[in-house]
Image 1 (cartoon, rainbow, N blue to C red):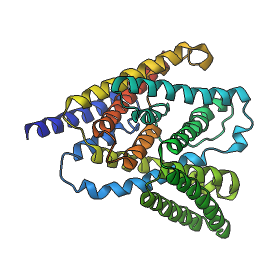
Image 2: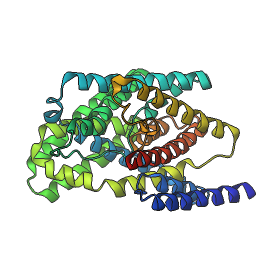
Image 3: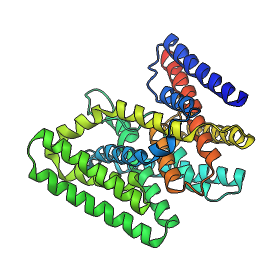
Length: 354
């Protein structure tokens, strides 16, 4: 009883403290952590959380679609080859080093796939790419489109290795079928309202199918989104409308994830959180010190945290391995991301002020 009361008070204090600090520093509080904290608070009350877990599948489906729609090869093919090479090596390097660190700390090889969730550097689930004059669009594309693309390719490859051969076949078949099916439906409809309804219906059907066959809704809908972004150009206005609704989608998703994960009161949770923060911080510090990655001009960059994309990948792994995945590690991962985000935004703001 007292433990639960202490956790509730601590979560409430953290929520209002973050809000006050960010308001004083004139930083946007919309980095997701306030909704995650609120979810942790609600997890301490019996609200039928078990009945809400199936809702994670359509949320992950929408997030995968949003990320996939940003991978427009029309923009990417204009980038120099070394830019794409850098993105691929960054994604692979971050993932491999993070995986090695987690395996050495825990002795649990299964957590190596979980390292994929810690590799991206992104404050939000995704950001819509709008080409701008006078701004280096390559940098925007790197964080918005290229890096998430390579990260999710790695994630799909890791799943293909760790899943059973039948599940891998299901994942490939569903990605292909839903992409072609969605494209056919969109080509038959010419009204904006109808196009949006078609996309909503397809994502819900796709996500629930993935739930039945226990495969990744994030991966399947991501590849469907990539296909649609490059084959159905008439739907670009609809894609922009979907991206504009990202904030409420993200808010509800993080609130739901916080409610379902909760914060356990055991030493393993504390050790896991500190381990993730230390590995992530050290890893980004190393990447800043390597001039090839062109981050040396931004010394605060190593504080930048894995954000919304990371939480989406981690949640996707969690719901697929609910019975075998260490629950304390998932909660620790969420708390570590939240803390790293706070440090990253504050450090970034201080860097901009100089």
